[in-house]
Image 1 (cartoon, one colour):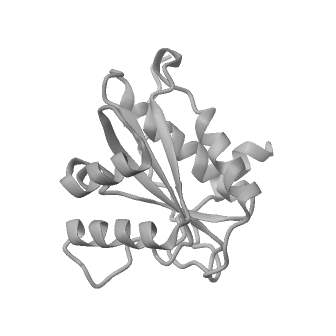
Image 2 (image 1 turned 180 degrees about the horizontal axis):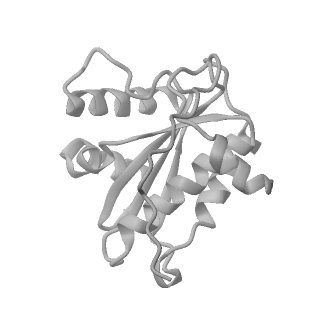
Length: 174
């Protein structure tokens, strides 16, 4: 079977990570895959922020956990790297553009032997005053919406087994 199709079938969300740092070369490849995602009219509205700084990672973790209402947890599952995707709200397709970047990065991480998991609540984080302040600190200007966080690292344990595919999800109009 084609390697790309096999990668799509075998990728799973990883929810336990080893503390080991991910080499920059691998993170760069994952990010590059996100930058090459399709986007509406080629606008490339998505931005990617690599977060390996522990203080910022933990700040985002606390914000995300508070939004979730579970402040005692790490919604990033201990991942040592977070790839944050934001998209320019001026592009009519920004939500789709950012989602495609996330999908590309999840597949690239898997192809490189890394685990990943899409973590939600980035929208709420970056609508908050604290989130807007973080963007200013990073030098990001404009009207961006948080699309998602991609937790990235080496899986601590086996990949989850794939769930059975539900029937009745394909219709044909020939």
